[in-house]
Image (cartoon, rainbow, N blue to C red; front, side, top):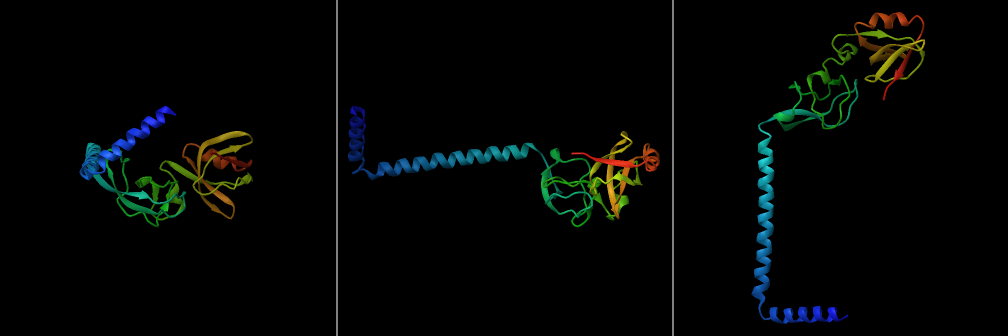
Length: 196
């Protein structure tokens, strides 16, 4: 209680001293504003220096929305530092072009992401072949989804990509070296295992 009275008396004394001297309040306000402006300018200088440290920039196409393989790409042109760019970003406008693989919002669109004609053949990775699969049990895998090809409980290909579906029959791309085995496995019944 005694401390409260002492603080209250000192506050009252300070107010009595400041009341006839309005210039003191103005000086304090101007000094506070100067400190604030200096802090903002210093922060802005640090930000500009950090940007300059990244080096030169280049306009690149960045995905505006998420898209999966087989869907049209929606992208926008953004300036990004060369230091953070992936290899071979696409130069051509990818808007409306079919995605060869899944893209997430903000991801730089690279040449391998774009399927120029939108045909199933454009979704097949280089060095792979596509095989139509007669599934023993339908997995309902979507275009662009990665799957594992099995037959009789044996993995035939642990790397496969659904590139098309035609009347419930998926067209699956697999590495060229296992494509003949996948085609042969169709005789005994193939199961596609969907991966997360």
